[in-house]
Image 1 (cartoon, one colour):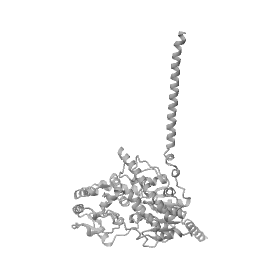
Image 2 (tube, rainbow, N blue to C red; image 1 turned 120 degrees about the horizontal axis):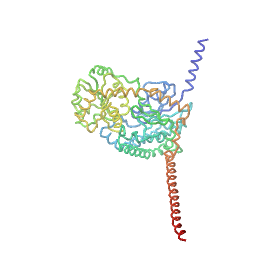
Image 3 (cartoon, one colour; image 1 turned 180 degrees about the vertical axis):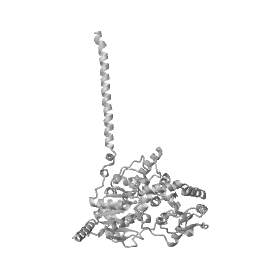
Length: 522
């Protein structure tokens, strides 16, 4: 009898799991490998929870996973962005970053909706069962929100960066430029009046530019998905959930609408690519420590000016027997003279290096995910920002006392000497890194479980379950402009009536005074 009860309970558990399994479409049209790392972890995590996950991306999985299907492989449809930028090109892009994100990246991605495989899918979507949710990365391409309208399915967005002011606006998220630096600002904190002025101006400027550039995506979207679709601005207001790559311990404390969920560090998983035996042995025998140097998957270190590279060689040679590991896309473009304590490689499993016990310093461009990895594994940083949000991320590390800023245009033997000596020998950086790691890790649920829970929540409870009333309010009502106008008008009107009353009273008093002498004389 006892065995029968156990079998019954197990069967009930299986039935519950089956009934709670959803079908989810993950669409990630951008071909940046670093961006996809976060998306990949989320989609595979959902599949492992028993949900049926269909994926459209440039990076089909190499190892089959139950419930996970690459239904459209976009690999080869766009020019590869890995190792595609020189340092100088990165600086140029940074001067016009909103334009590049909204047009050269986002706008171009919209044309993939017209790809033959995409069109076949759009015209013949699976219906047994239909999709319960669409998840897509919001990277300058709101046109992909149209897939939700075509499939009659709620849409959640994934942000590999902090949420921007324009995302805040369509989610209905309160944002105060008085104390929190927007994503268009390079500041970690707002210390002065002019910091706040610039924070307001630059973020509103970029939001208006983004609206302008991406509004043109409506026609491209309608061309490929249907001319009866709402415009991209309306589709944005229908977004049910935003999973954001931030965490208050790193980026600051502020208020959030329920539909914005912080999942900073989502891409950091224990199941990381192992080191090659040769590299592992080299790291294991680095008894005096290791410095790891990379400018990310986009920017090439070898594109730095020759004088700067030779200065780095000299500086790295001085810290021997500490070893230096550099990620170099094309080592043949490096000038000769690499010190004996330096090893270069075109591909390095970054997390495996950062979590190694001998790693002491991370020299980085300041990408958000690399910054989070450094925090997670307690590694002080030397930041060399080039473009995008890198300057802000590096400034945050400096503000948290676990990083040093070096400007790419000022790189020299002397500047690197000072930075390396300071960060290697001043214990405050390692101490701050340990503290930041503790704060970053201390959560009721890890990032993946948090993302999965809220994804399931909006499917269970409906697309409007986290929606703020602010989303559907016009800007003048949301900002109480009508109330302020009413109060000011009432105050002015009250002053006017008071003025009229006083004037009338004084006039009557003077009239009475004039009459009294005349009455006496009579």
